[in-house]
Length: 171
Image 1 (cartoon, rainbow, N blue to C red):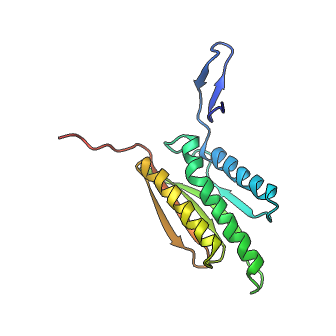
Image 2: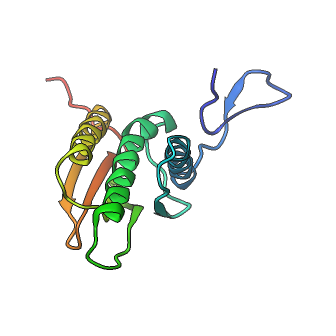
Image 3: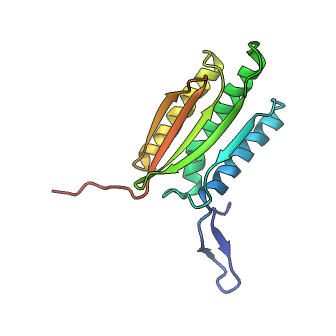
């Protein structure tokens, strides 16, 4: 059984106790490391991934939910960026994936942006599947997903998780 982030056994209490939840940056760092290891094991070229998330940011969802929404996006962004690096020929260009977050006061927004090509094919199909998975996760948590074409090429996908899930009141 895997231990959820932020749960640690103590000597006084032999069962798992919720202590301090792992920060969003820690969780995203673990997700990026998992994607990087998968690429290495598959002998794919490494991709530079920058994480720009303040230590104090947190999401009102558990680590497994974040992983389910973000890992497919990080994988697809790395694939698109790596493909662009191989097929580009138009001169040097920064090829990277950037994961950022912003706290809007009512929600935490996590953006995964790549500098990859917008070429159709396997990369586009992987991105469509990744976005569909991310959207399903976000909507289950009362959130949403937005897509934005980056001006320099590539795609930015933003997951929005509300700080508290708003439930409708029965009449």
